[in-house]
Length: 369
Ligand SMILES: Nc1ncnc2c1ncn2[C@@H]1O[C@H](COP(=O)(O)OP(=O)(O)O)[C@@H](O)[C@H]1O
Ligand SMILES: [Mg+2]
Image (cartoon, rainbow, N blue to C red; front, side, top):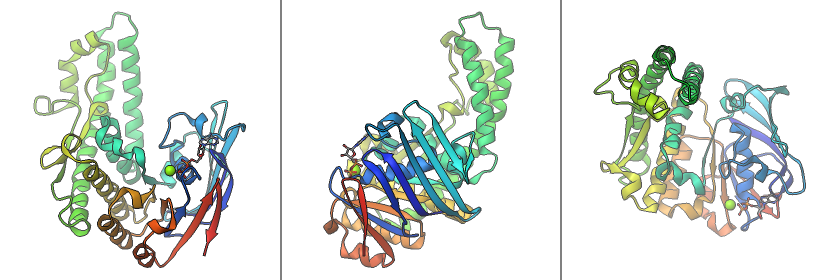
């Protein structure tokens, strides 16, 4: 996947930006507050309708305006040229378009325009709650396994219905819960098997990348997928749900299943969030993102778009070199922001002979030769 041109209107301090990125490496240079992260937010928005900085879309809309628009001309390995559009207005309406056609679901855009980012909030992946870590697996499965979204939607709908029933305050009949449990178990077991399988491929890919590109720095990292129920005691989800029915009714909540799964990120066998330094966590984070990219390229042939906010400030020189070596072996369109020209070393420039450089000030972008 690559973005051939991008237009941004009224997103934070970006009133009107129009540029044609390089198919490989793009440097975005500008002082604090100039609009670099906002630019990356625009690309992320085009993929999944969300900002990585805030769940509140209204904060993204430029002050004193009522609508933001992001539009991209993309080239996909599978679909050829695609026009992608996304708008959000102050009334809370989001519109997503593919080739001018309004899409019922924003996920239709994510499917054709996969984006991965590493920015200030990304450490939450290691330090925060389990849903973000489940997201590592689900992101990959969403793009690689055709049936994933359908299975997930069936599971989520049944879970919603069961939750509504448990929370309704009415006396709950076991037969009613059992109906939803059979649906939840049917799709839940499938999701669980797929996630476990994907974890194995992901871990193998991570380990390969860590050996090839990060020498000894990431060798202690491991992953452990946990299903969301005790599989040792209950090999199938239905057995667990049947046995724990009373507990779920008493707690008025769905307590077991893939929505409670966890992907433990381990460092020498201990949870990385508990023992790693901030620098080590960042490195693990880079390893995870690069493994996601490598696995996608391996499985689909196509690569996602990679957003690296303030790369020079985030990693030391040695590890920046490692990332560069990876990106040369697994080319993917990348947007790298930095505060000033000095932080983009001669080494980075010569490694990526082919690149474009943009300078941004007060939300205005200029391509520099
Ligand atoms: N809704 C908004 N309307 C207008 N300006 C905004 C809005 N939200 C943030 N800003 C401003 O946008 C500027 C760009 O921020 P940011 O992209 O984070 O800069 P950088 O990453 O270059 O440091 C900041 O000066 C910020 O105050
Ligand atoms: Mg920034």
